Length: 198
Image 1 (cartoon, helix red, strand yellow):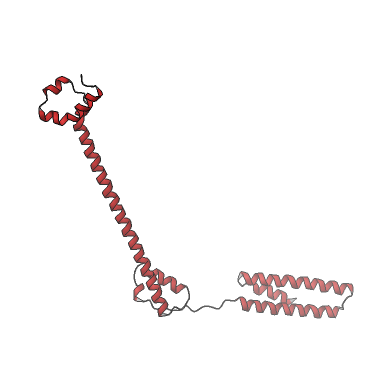
Image 2: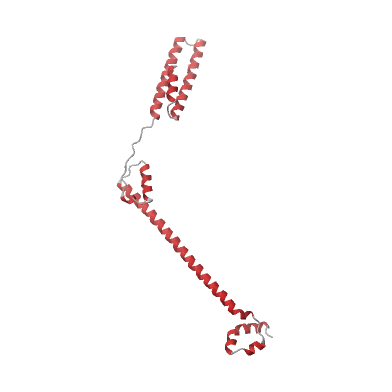
């Protein structure tokens, strides 16, 4: 039974997975020991057989605990040192290189070259996308400005063409010079057809 307590006290100082495994082993040993005690009390085995069986079970449990502890103890990983290629010594690119270093994979020069080309392609694509967006915005601004100028011109023309909204009289038409009549001829003829001129 001392071995069972040994397992429990050693597990207290370990990581949670080992503690869980130790508790599981301890619970199984306690159940087996109770079963053996019942068998001894009922006379199915002698006191000496029960004692030997308990010792055997606790010994096996202790061995199983030690095996589990050795398997679950992670071995420290030596970080690999990759020299930083010149391509990655720029803002943004250095983040990619740091990520590659943390991936804990040994990249050869060919793979680094392919990754460099991919990073450059992504950068160029981003720049092209930005320039297209800028060009589109510039086109929209130009079209908007052109539309505003047309609106302003129409607004000014409608103010100067206020005479079109005026209904002419025969007297006014008679007093017009040739140039004035030519200027308002379309409105005058339209008003004549509608029967507005009196």
